[in-house]
Length: 167
Image (cartoon, rainbow, N blue to C red; front, side, top):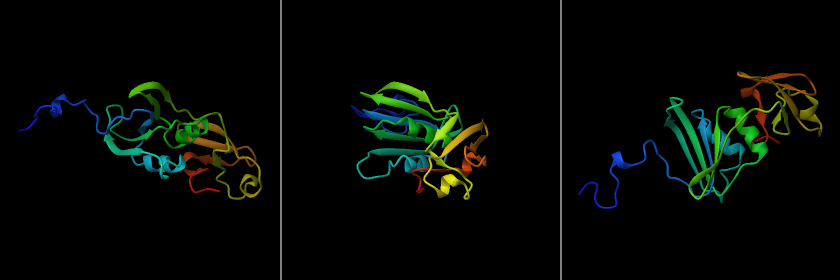
């Protein structure tokens, strides 16, 4: 018998919910399609020990398609917010406690990024010496950063984020 006792019919299910809820942890929502894996990699979420749900190319009312990441029992640091902002500047991060959204934050690209990304200029001192990387935001849309040391301008997609296969 279809729709038996205890089973919800599709019309009764929560509209649009394609992945199961988490009790405690972090949900990164409104990620551009195809970017969730890159974000999971730079946040080191693909390591053993993390329960991670990645949804790709999900339907969105705000955007046509989006990616989504859910991580159980893990919350993000400020540096991690900055990394997400460089890849998904319109992302929203929800902190979940007891299956409820406890806090909701939009990521933003900060005015100054320190020790988050490498300068795209291979000859920059920050790529050759042990000096902290420091980039300034010139534009957020499109994303353009300039290096503190060599004044090299980089588009967002040219930046190599620390923790993403970098040194």
